[in-house]
Amino acid sequence: MTECVSILGSTGSIGTQALEVCKKLNIRVAAITANSSIELLEEQIRRFKPRLAVVGTKELADKLKIAVRDTDTKISYGMDGLIEAAVIKEADTVLTSVVGMIGLRPTLAAISAKKNIALANKETLVTGGNLVMSSAKENNVNIYPVDSEHSAIFQCLQGCCDKKALKRLILTASGGPFFGRKLEQLKNVTPKQALNHPNWIMGAKITVDSASMMNKGLEIIEARWLFDVPADRIDVVVHRESIVHSMIEYADNSVIAQMGIPDMKIPIQYALTYPDRTSCDVGVLDLTKVGTLTFFEPDYDTFKCLRACKKALEIGQTAPVLVNGANEAAVARFLGGEISFTDIGEIVWNVMQDIKLRPADSLDRILEADAAAREYANTYRA
Image (cartoon, rainbow, N blue to C red; front, side, top):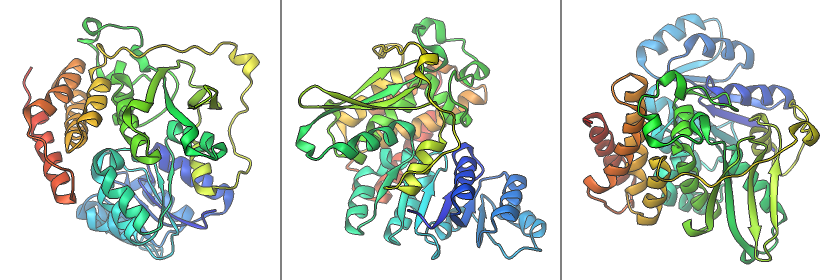
């Protein structure tokens, strides 16, 4: 069980819930980070008294230093600050819940410092899966998934005595706000509509990713690395109720599922307490009130992002880096009103065809591919 944690992304949805879990379980907090939410970060500093707090820029750091000058918390900023938080001596676990590929470098730093990782930043494994998992093995570091789907699979696998008996992983997807619609019906979707998720309260980027089903595509790639299972043994089913969080199927065709109400405190807490379980401040699942659980095939033609991620995993090399970087930039443009919702899928699909693929064998090569993908997405014209 974690005794002291560093939380990268403490002001986001996962980070704030993780702090509540820490409060309940008396887990000490050594470091917290945010991009720009310095008011909330100040509240967290005063409540949890971390040794270090990190923000995005020097200007914000200077403001925060003045605001918390009566505390003992050191203030830092930028990527150097994130890495400092990731390797801070007191923490035995680093929870990475920053948004996007920015999480890759501090996660690698934390692993090199022999910190266990509670992973809520799927882009880290999407872009640097081989580097991250190889480093984790070399440093004898555990990576505990926080995403509800991967936590569900991780929990189901606790009963798997022989990996040879594992037939496939089945990730569930809510289908987002546009389930059942066809491509033509999505061309005029607004950011407000895309941010109206039916089951989960999340940040803007991941909510748009859920609407485009990019999120599920990224999760397929993440699952491949987390569980060392090839792409052709990872499936997706749309499950509107978000009660079954994912499943595994064994060689004898039996299926094990993990269920619960849609509340991220469950996977956050399990990542921090593994292998122990304790009470959690979430609602009780009453299947008689749920009544019906439904499952559907994904629509790969309408949701091109999902298809692109499966293709990227099949191709390998820097293809996953390209689709991830292009998507991050495209989502930002969509939220800014520059491109349409369906343009996101076009950009993510085409980036693999239009940018040369290279081996993803170093951090520099990964960062180069990411920069190229973002430039491609930022200059895209419909």
